[in-house]
Image (cartoon, rainbow, N blue to C red; front, side, top):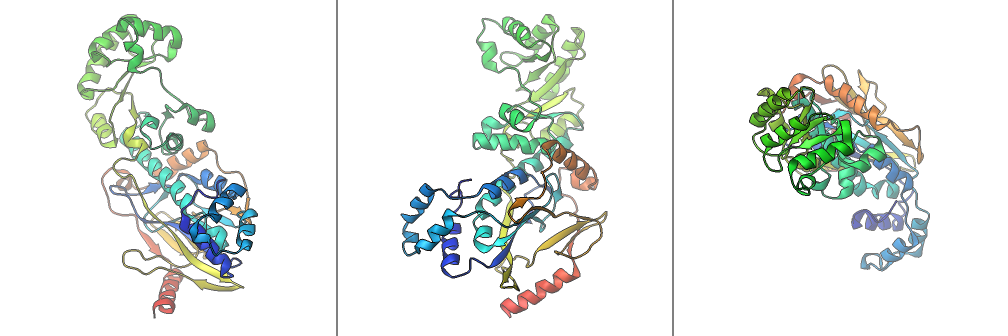
Length: 437
């Protein structure tokens, strides 16, 4: 894994730690949610396999080291540091909440423990990997909840910020409750169901719509979904009904979805196609889906693109990567940040969830309910295979179903109680006294 896929200051600090004789110090860093994105009652953790792959394969090539040696910032660094980077590997520990776990403001997602340089360098990659997929999975949960059980299909790769973001976004969307994706690579790589038949260009490439529909049926058979709105959605529905079976369904991508779906349903039913499904796509989000479902629109499934693949209404998440404790020759020192609005909490932590609240406790404490932070990597080795994407999806569905209805609604509700244990509160007070006075 490319060691340069990070911010430069991670590497200048690495050189500084090395030259200062601190490379043997054991550090514990924590990725935590500072605050929830707007309009969210929780987020859904996703992205752990990419983090594990990064940590297990993190290294520096000779060309990368040669590049770093050309930079002014490293002009006075000793040759021993470059020899250190040549052999660099992650030998530390990773603890994480399982993918598909709902989390709330202030709670940790990941804990990284190891020699300070090994624990510092991953900051940039880990924050990027965990926050992106968590945002998309969280948006997918909202969309799936709004659909009232009707399938939601992820259509967003062409609007994602990179093609690879489209693949990972499809994965996160599936964990969050989407039924399928249009991304073929996501289907191949992760086993996610894929869906898609044709675009407007297919219809426009033939002399008339009827011929385009007929040709598509010959190719796709029972999997045919006719796109109706290239010219006129209702006329398209009449053409589809006239052709008849085989036909899985039809898709409308523009217009008044409520009115059109009712008229199209009538056309299909009168044409002897009551089993043909209606899909709506085109600038949909969870609010529009909710409104269509509430109005009784006879739409059987929804396709989401831009709004889902970019988490458009909440495109970033305030997460932090902070040093919370150090072990220097067996002596433990707790660390925290106290600047205004950016306070961090010292010490390695565990989160206990029961039916009434979450308790953030010190690592090693006993608590009521489920302990959310699980060991994933110990001593640089994966301790057991990670759950599959299907298992993560199932965990997400079960976990979200246990949340109070007010937390699953689209509007912001009463926050879920999250408190500190007595031992953690005492550590916070003691650390602040020691550091600030």
